[in-house]
Length: 333
Image (tube, rainbow, N blue to C red; front, top):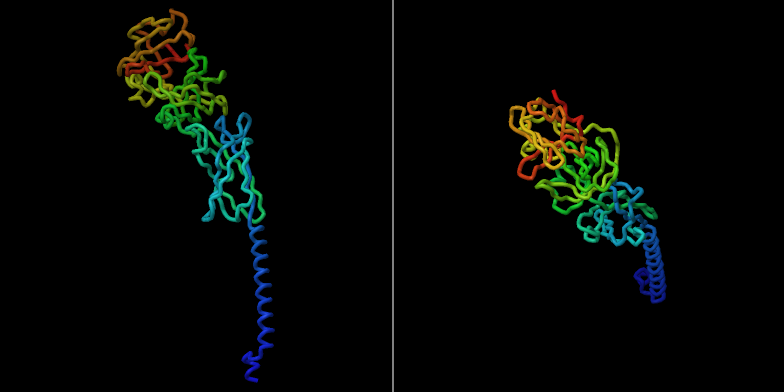
């Protein structure tokens, strides 16, 4: 009896050993199968495309192009970092991402050019469940800045600003358009868009440059958002306008009142007037291409008192001059 309970019988001991071995083997097989099933089912798919946001709209739309060769990162919290590279068609796929929460990003070193950056990841954060399939879009474009930020951006950098135009593209015949937002104004030069009107709200894509010692956005392309906005105008004295208020209103649209014409001259095809509201002299240019074609203008008379709206343009010698956009900008009192 004691021997039986204590497994002293070789026959009994053998039977127990065999049964135990089979049970362990069966359990291990089940656990292995369950593990394999869980491993297969506990993944999902994330697939999408990378596009070049050509017009700065921050959505994929007409005119945008698909972009290959961009390394996309799927970063888990706190899980793994998965990578995939977009193909020639812009597409990328994470075929078996473990379930979890992820963020989408890109390796900016794989972008063509040094001005491009990530402008949109949709969704930027995602929760991936077992057997989920998530669609994603990644936009790559130029950084969107305020005008004040664009004015101090690095030379040669391509940027996007959203602003209101202060003059038509053909106002002065040199394809220069002044634009402003609530932070500042800037000239856009060699504007590529053929149709731009005063008061348009636009997205401007341009390369940071300089002209006459002041920042510009060169070779600018403009995409109209809305039309009919009222261009922002600031009231200044002639003395402040002559120095662009220490440069703060360079390229802005300003208004001076009750300024007296003290001198006149002809420079090329244009008339130059010196005006003063009592605070100090300011040079004003009546550009022939802006419609100032007659010599017998009421404003072009020494002693005339004027109210003038115009653009503040650097004269190239540390001072600025005022350029009315059309004869309607000049009112002789």
